[in-house]
Amino acid sequence: MRKLALVLAAGAALLAGPALQAKERLTGEQQLAKLLEGREAGQPVSCIPLSSTSDSRIIDKTAIVYDSGRTIYVNRPRYPDSLDSDDIMVTVLHTSELCRLDTVKLHDRSGFFFTGFVGLEDFVPYRRVERAN
Image (cartoon, rainbow, N blue to C red; front, side, top):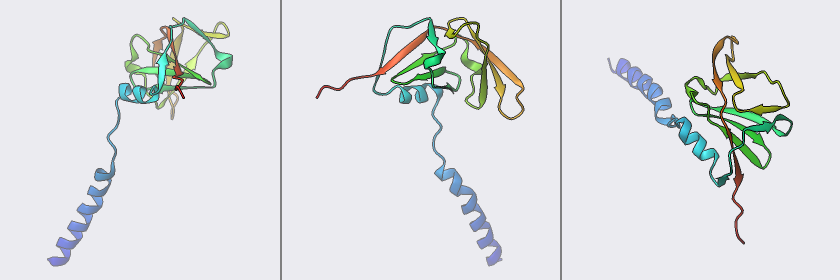
């Protein structure tokens, strides 16, 4: 009986360990706020040149962020509920720029099945705030 109690206690400790170590998952708004720390918003623009964009990422149910070196552009689609950071973005371009009203299709990363789409809005540029010395 004592061995059974020890085995059960050890099993419970093993199961509880990961739960205690798990970090609290940030909401999309919290992730975006963390990404924008130390940056200041500029005037929204309707298009961004893709040739200067080096990276893009989805912030769950919130926004798409395009990295352009010293500037990052944040696009908050009108209906962002289908945005999932695990999805792949597929954008069909008609020019060399990504513009307001273009659409981004979202596909599952593992099976590549369609999971939704969003229509883009204006792009808000964020630049690092210069510190006074």
